[in-house]
Length: 131
Image (cartoon, helix red, strand yellow):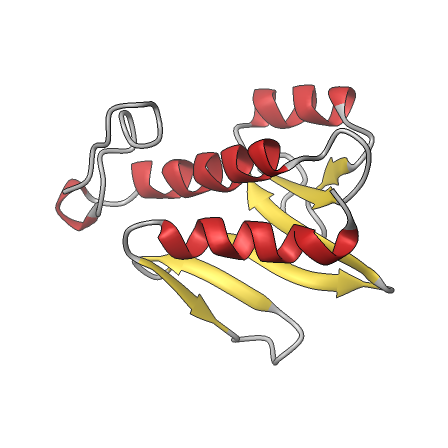
C-alpha cells in the first residue's frame, strides 16, 4: 500500500464502524476517531509520512512490530498499548482494516456494557454483534 491510500483506507474503515466519530481536537493536521468519546485511531503526517496510530493488545503489538517493519511503537502514545502504522511492503488493505477494527474492538470492550455500540467479542469476527 502506498502512502496516499493509507489514510483513505483507514478512514473508510473507521467511518463504517458503529458509533465512530471523527474529531479534530489537536487542530486540522490530526484526525482523531473516537467511539463513545474514547480514542481508537489517530491519523497525521510525521515529517512528510502519513501514519495511522492504533490501539493494540500489548502481546499482539509486539508480534506485529516483529513481523512488519512498517509497524512501530505508538507515536506520542503509550508504547505498550499503541502502534504506529506506515505504508510500505506488506501493508495492504486487509491488514489496515483488521488493525483498525481490532483497535475499535479493544476500546469498545472497555466501555460500560450499556454504552457499547457492538459486542466487542463477536463484532468483526464473522458474526456481526451490532446492537
